[in-house]
Amino acid sequence: MGNNRIIEITLDERTVVRRSPDVEHERKIAIYDLLQKNYFSPISGLKGPYYLQLGMEQGDVVFRLRDQEGKDVGQIVLPLAPLQYIIRDYFIISDSYYYAIKNSTSSRIESIDLGRRGLHNEAAELLQETLSDSASIDMDTARRLFTLICVLQIKA
Image (cartoon, rainbow, N blue to C red):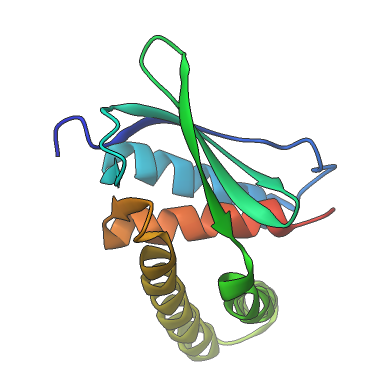
């Protein structure tokens, strides 16, 4: 893994007013897990490790990269369009999951969670494919980045 990793990640939250406790919990877990283990290597050959700010700009996801000294070293712009449908579906199933946690049986919760995880894996694969011209990432990194991209889509 070496230097091909993210050592700090922040979200550009200029448009965020407030998040639910469930979403805030998902954000914290995704960032924590991502920083524990990730693989991120820009195709440009840019050397890491990387400080990453993830944000939205004109409907695209922007990965702003800084080096260890804090100097801006580039950005990757990811069109959001290929992910839109899966983000919508993920929000729907996540809402069902959070509702089930409060109102359903454990078997119902497990069923919904299984579907949610499957959709999350599908989204991570699509993210890897969509980013492939700009950066190489592993599946776990893609899963956590997808979660954070979803968090950025929430408008209080």
